[in-house]
Length: 249
Image (cartoon, rainbow, N blue to C red; front, side):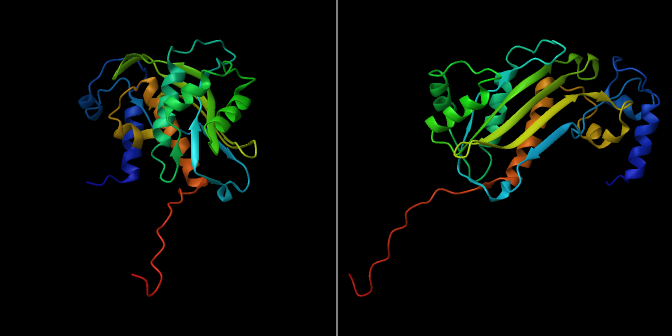
């Protein structure tokens, strides 16, 4: 059954007025009874900044490597959850493998090369990405930082503190040493009372407070979908057998 957009927003507004706090308990069924005290929401992330060089669509890439993401705490000094960089790296690699036409360097090959290099820091990140690319014969390398990764405190429907994630991804052309594309993502989940325009995503997620991994994965998916739409790729050339010459047997 279709729900008209105006009706959806009306529902969101009426529910939002009944939802003053984010830590109260309620069941999914309560959201339709008018007894909701708190209503979390997950929507399409508006906090994704995307930048690419002019002419990126003309650049052809076949082989791509994903360098391990590194931790880089933000200016507030808020600690980053242990394993956050590894989790984001794994999600980026998994998403890139879904891009048709790109050959992705195996994680084991990347690890082998990285073990022979000095540890990656903020200052050496770009140079290490170029070194990695040359060592594994990649056309381009994805690298980046995670600056915030705070886990949700509470349950799906009663969060005392929401999840928050921030990271940056870059794609560098190994041959020309040019950063072709950058995505910056910063998201903290908010209740419907704070942004009623996320009602569509709230309905899709059944009003749950999600975990940090869920926020990160959505940002990665949106970012790499943008990269896929902008960056050209080339398929490997498979030698074709020559047809027999006319009159030969």
